Image 1 (tube, helix red, strand yellow):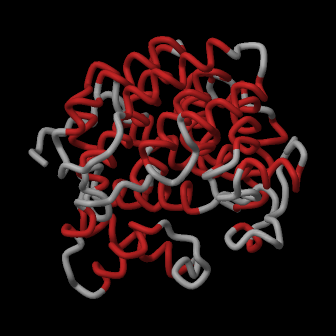
Image 2: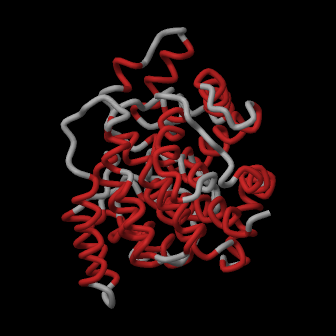
Length: 336
């Protein structure tokens, strides 16, 4: 098993779980309520989403990622929209995701339409939220960075059930490429360069939306990271105000890439994301997966990994083995 692939999966789960308690709260409210988040916490009774979770439990970001992997393992890693939708829907029903306000806005509507036997494309073509990017990190671990266009087409095929717009495919592709690069090279500068390299091609695979540039916002985030290299609070404040931390792909993906670049360490990254404000669990899942891929499972605090295993009862090693066996050999040539 590839230690770095395992790092991606645990990194994703850790960032997701660490960012769960203040999910979708403003930065001001996070600071007022928590002061500083320094570890795993139970969901907050005042939070409309996280109140139902216990410390260390991951949310829909990791839950859907594992549902997608279940589907891909079942179909020999040939993406099937029908199979992926069925597995995500099965997960959603098991978690009472529709009733408990767990699903994101795009996925909720798209999955309901799928269940009713209707096409969601008219809706998913206009999607701008981050549901495709939030769950994509393990897919990046299937590819080498040199497989850029193949990676993007595969991401689009995996995402098509709920997200078919340019910004959502590009955002997910950039996160997947950041993971691929981190696993292969473990270099923060190259990770950003590789992630930016797929934006233009990935945008061409989806329906056009009036969205801001992911690349421009990511570059701004990196500049902020460099300018505030010794001031974590200053960095988070400026990132939150200038790049954004909301559920739109154009905010959360650049924010995640910037925090991954800034920290490049699972513990530091997860804590930064949790204290950012906004879509903390999703930004944490994306960013910390990149850091886990860069440094591997062996660099993750043992207590963090044990907390994830205890709280979720999920054996991530099974998934890591399946992905590791396919890494670099997961060729995808189908037109999207």
